[in-house]
Length: 177
Image (cartoon, rainbow, N blue to C red; front, side, top):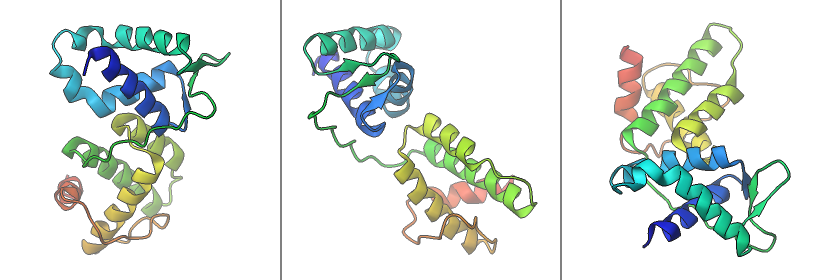
């Protein structure tokens, strides 16, 4: 696959994850979050990918595969099916980011402080490139593990027992700190 077609597919993937519309910055953040390792192993593309991403977007606009809104956001044209994001396993860094966010919200809830849940979730989404649905499921999995530790989980995330690999050690590590 050429770097142009690769970048084009990543733009489409990011827009699919974002609900068909996103700023170029949000697209770049999602591309980095989802494909950092690919970029690091792609030679010179690591140093040019953001410029190449914009050039690819311009080509996609020219041939009608992408629209640019007045706000500057990139949008998929009506009738264009947003590609389903590729299913991928959670990396250790992603799991740790979600667990740290969860534990921060847990400390706030248990100490009676206000929980800035929207801000925490937005920060985690930016770090991981995961959708809100994926985060909701992971947070529910973390609730289950927190409960296994004898701690009352966050009231907003009902525990789910199908815990992915890597979550239990990450929770244990964060709770031990």
